Length: 543
Ligand code: MG
Image 1 (cartoon, helix red, strand yellow):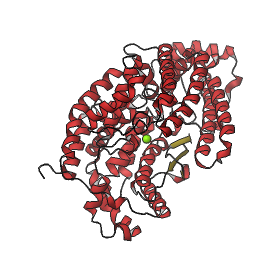
Image 2 (cartoon, protein in one colour; image 1 turned 135 degrees about the horizontal axis):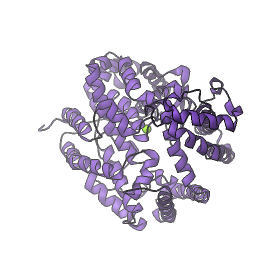
Image 3 (cartoon, protein in one colour; image 1 turned 30 degrees about the vertical axis):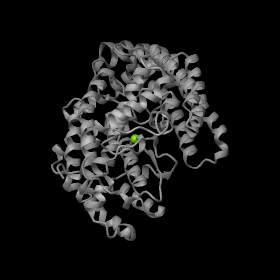
Image 4 (cartoon, rainbow, N blue to C red; image 1 turned 30 degrees about the horizontal axis):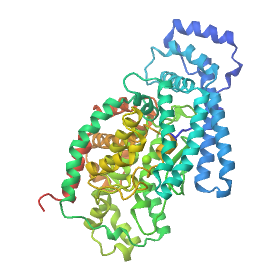
């Protein structure tokens, strides 16, 4: 659930300049402030900063390896020992990052990079690291410790509460995590809205007011779209609920990964209970998938989704290796990449024109007699449901808006935790026309709040909206994407994404990156137009 972090052990490329004396540093500081444009990558202070950050990144990468192993191969009995190991390595990374030395180097370098192009590696490194550094130092150690403790208790309580459908068991923990988030937001500071401080952790630079406005626009159009679809002849997706051999599912997913140009010399796929992407460096970006024998889409689209995340991180400029810039710009941009490959490519008709015959040849008994159109409609079936992670492309964003609104109201203290289950049901009715049978399938379904992660949910919907804006711009620049996709040719699309999105890493915040790539601000209109176009065809009006 943590923001993915990348790092590498490619330390040998940078000379170790810990030998640089303080007088040398002071001298070059004076020199460079007169000739600001002369700051070069060989500047001793920059090299020193990169080396110190490199060690932080190595520690973060080590923690990521431990976590990856925990989710894939680790025996269950190791859980407690592993938790301690991860906590130790993470706290070492935090200690190494928040040293006074890094603060002094940033102070020294800030005037030097002022006149550089803001997306030069030097300027971006100093700017983004300063932001991370200030945030990391603003949180009192005691708050971090109390937060971690509360989370570990809340996670246990949430697991039990969900299993036993017992919200009151979780409620006191949720209450204390809300208090701690308010405390955290106050410590981090904000200008307009307290929620800004929390959102900023996952979507740097994004403002609550903008998200609220975009979600309001989205809701106004989306609720009637879902209602209209519900009133039209429904899609039958029973063909997807047959028995599909897990090995054959795995092999087909691997074929698609290769065609998407996921680089297996710098990554691998494994199995885990919950699919995820993690990276240990730009040259080691791994994914996992989950295979459900009696439901084909689970592994199929899960693999494509994680491939989108991984292609992003494999495409980051190698120059950013072993720095905090070697990561996605935000969770929203990250999700835009996973959704682009999963939905805009992977659930499109042109894609299946190419791949359906192959899939039929793998599963002749299950799909041999099923026409392409029936398969295409089945994988795009729209049906309001209780569970966010099982939601289709159309209804998914409504699940997110509901959570975003409740989070804001909780953080603003306009909603009390004791009223949460009732408000949840009432809003589900309003947005999706259904009410969960119980709290386990309602307010207790997601792990996020038990982890204290407030501000995370909206990034999923922002990613969906950005995915169509980005995909459509790629289409405008490249000509007919449908044709390339129908030929199984993803090279040009990937190259476009590399050029306009991936290579920047964290140099630009989401809105700047989007503006640069598409000449547009964030908006729901492109996604809404896409949904109308696609689903009017799958669910024809007046039929
Ligand atoms: Mg994702």
